[in-house]
Length: 478
Image (cartoon, rainbow, N blue to C red; front, side, top):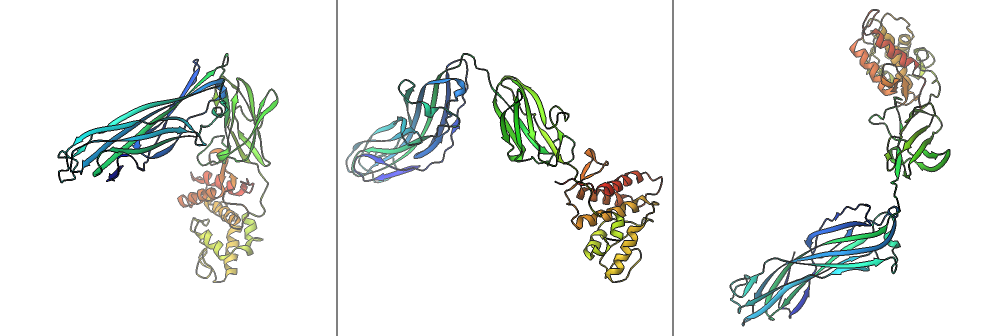
């Protein structure tokens, strides 16, 4: 960014320049040596700016902090344009100064430098053209000036507690630019100034005689929808569950699962541990690390510095008993008065079939047809549907599947259980399927094969689905 000055008395001139920068965090590591170094950089950018410097604090796990050194390396990159508009020649000095500093969260300066750039030009009297050339003007080349500042803190004389802990120190890097001009009273001058800095913190410490790295244990408690012991796509974590870490029969840490059912025990030494989940009422365990024999608890060994992320636990809700109604016999008699026109329309959207394999449609009772036709009133429609549900022949397995599917759908529509309720079904992996998915599975089977008499290759599969719909009244509350 460029600042323009014209016809101002000689000396230092200040200007505010906008900027947008990114800064990088250096890496630090602990070794057998007694220092750890971190650095953060604000790249070359137009002044003025203030940016956070993410310099980590000293982790007390490394040992005892004895000294802190903060170093600031700063640079000033400047270009100036000058035109002498006076009637006599002048020697003109132009340039800039940048004040760079590192401050703590309270604004106190921890380290500071002020690199300057100067250009000296002998210019002739004004040649009548403001072009920064022709003898009376000049565009100076870009020049960079760098400086280093440093401040030391020692445990013997300074309070180092603010440097110790986790997280970052909350330091800021600040750059304030000021243009400089010394020459005639009639002139035209402009300057472009950029600045960069690198702040470095060095921690000097006394390590313990032997540091044994600590480890961690954790991962996830999840809802195993199909009870297959595998974290399948879309299976959610169980949030708000209590998880305990046990060592030597004593609970040493307790956590509550957070987002997506995650938990973590950290800062753990070498040893044998157990992780115990306090299961909520109505849930059965489907998976843990060492099998289900122990129930809600998994045991494991932790090596030095090891971070185990395999202590997962799967759960699903336990059976809560049989639903009322739910059979073709129920809907053909006691439940028949509850059937509404919208229910018949929903059933018509499915591929329900007669014993012959022909469609069995249930549409609006004033316009639709069922098995060749029925009267325009709802009572007649209900009676025809009741007769359909009451048939017990197994000549065509598809028709038996249809009758069971119709009863199941009416159970869903009447609120007997939710579409997400899990049902027993041996035709799917894991033996559990959502009610809505079971409806879709049965409907697809009927569309593919509407007539499955004895000996038909698809009869056994359809019978399995029929049994799932029939025995699916043992529900699993989500």
